Length: 176
Image (cartoon, rainbow, N blue to C red; front, top):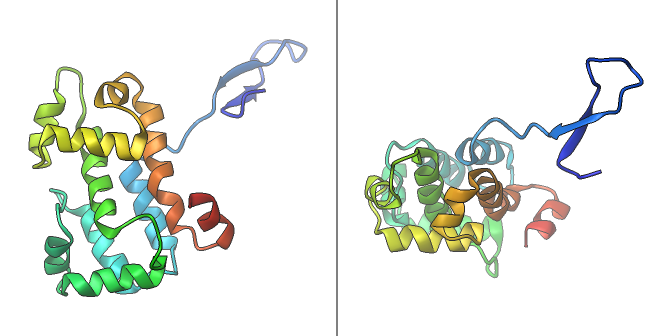
């Protein structure tokens, strides 16, 4: 049986064969799931958590750590230090990668039929090629691939970041 499918009893007779339907995924989007993960993550400092939650809630995504730090009322070096203390010096994910992830997630959330990626890139204040680079980095898909299968792209986007905020050692080992 496929891992993404759950057997549901048929409304007909109990002896009827089971029908497979797609398993219900979390109805929330990647940004909301990141917010939940950040709120549960005890291994990051309150200052860094608050700054990242602020980035998640901002109407326009932050494009730099310096802007995020200014909005959080601290210096960018302070946020970077907090990041390194939480994630370690050799961690593959950088703080600015989280901001890039949020840019892509916001653009994906705004995606609608008839709306071009160029329009979405303008809406999040980046060049379309930058958005394409973020899509390849976090989902391993082109923007066309993201459009073709938004659910799979969204799941890949979540897998690229959210496991890093798991407080258990196994969750962090699986994320790396």
